[in-house]
Image (cartoon, rainbow, N blue to C red; front, side):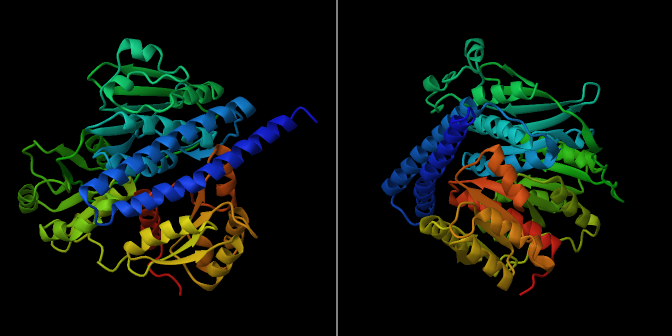
Length: 495
C-alpha cells in the first residue's frame, strides 16, 4: 500500500458517510417542511418545529465534523482559479437567505466601487469561508440582519471582507477563545444552540492556508464584525462601471433594516442615483419600501411617488395585496444590483410604470427533477407544483438527458449520484445539445459538498451547486431565482 492510499481511502469513506447520512436527513427535513405548510393544530405545529430544529442541528453538526475530519485527513489543498468575487458572494447570500428570512432578518451584500470583477483564488474555499461566517452570524442574530461588505486594497492587492451583524456581541473573554476547536463562546448561557464549535476553527485554518487572516471586533450589545484580509495572486479585470442613467433619481428608503438600507444605498450610488433615508423631507422620485410596512404607511408613500416593495420569495402570496395598495412593483430580497437598476430604469415614464409580473408568468414553467431517491424527488415536485410549476422526474442521468432532449425546461435540478449515468455525465451531455437546450439553468444537488465536488459540478456544466438537505423554502428560492433569470434571458421557451 502506497503512502497516499490510506488518505484516498479515508477521503472516500468521508464522501460515502456524507452521502448516506444526508440522503435520509434530506427526506426528514423536506417532509417536515411540507408538513409545516399544511393545516396543523398548535400542538402539531410545535412538534413539526421541533423536528426541523433538531434536523437543522444534526445537519450543522454533520457539516462541521466532516469538514474538520476531511482537513485532518487530506490537509487543505488549494486550486486557484479566476473567480467572480461579487457573484460568488451573492450566491452564498442567496443560499442562506431563507435561513435569515425565517428569523425576520435581512442578509445583504455591499461592494466597493473599486472591487475587481475577478481575482485568482480558490473559489471553493472562499465560498466555504463565507458560508460558515455568514451562517454563523445569522445563527446568533435575532434582530436586524447581516451585511457582507466587500472591499479592495489596491496597494497590497488584498480583498477586504467584513461580515457585520447586529447580534448580541461578545465579551473580550469569549473573543479570546472563539477560534479554538469545540468552543461555543457565549452561546450556551444565551440559550442558543451554538453547535459543535468547529465552524470558526475551520475558517481560520482555511484562511491560514490561503495566507489570509481574520480578526473580530465586538462588544456586548454592539454586534460583531469579522474582518478578512485575503491576498490574491492577480486581478483579472476591473469591474466595468455601469452606464449612468439619463435621469438621476432621488430614491427614498422606507422601513428597511440597516443592512438592507446600506446595501441598496451603495447600489443606487454606483448606478448614478441618490439614496435618501426615510426621515428625509427632500422630494423623492421613487420609494423602496419594506413590504411589511402597515398598509396605511404604504398608501402614504404611494401618494408621494411610485413604490417598489421589498419582499421575500416566500411572500409572493402578498403581491396582489401590495398591488391593490398602489405599489408599482417589487424587488426580491436579497436584492441584486442588476435587478434594482432594471426596475429603476422603468421609472422614466411614471404614468405607465408597472413592474409587477403578470399572474401567469410562472404558471406552466417546466422543471426537470433528476434524483434516484423517491422521497427527495417527491419533496421537490410537491414543493414546486404548489407554486404552479410543472415538474417532470427522472431517476437516472440517462433519463434526465432523454427528457432534456425531448422537452425544453426552464430549470433542471440534477442530483450528482445516480445509477446508469451520474449527474456529472448527464450535465456534460446536456451542454452539448443543440440550440437553446444547452443553456438551460442546471442546479446540481449533492449530499456531499466540498470544493472538489463543487468544482467538478461546475466544470460539468452546473450553473450553481446546492447541498442536501434542501427544505421547501430554500428549494423554492433557488428555483424562482433561476427561472426568473431564464425568463429574463429568453422571452419564450421552445416546446
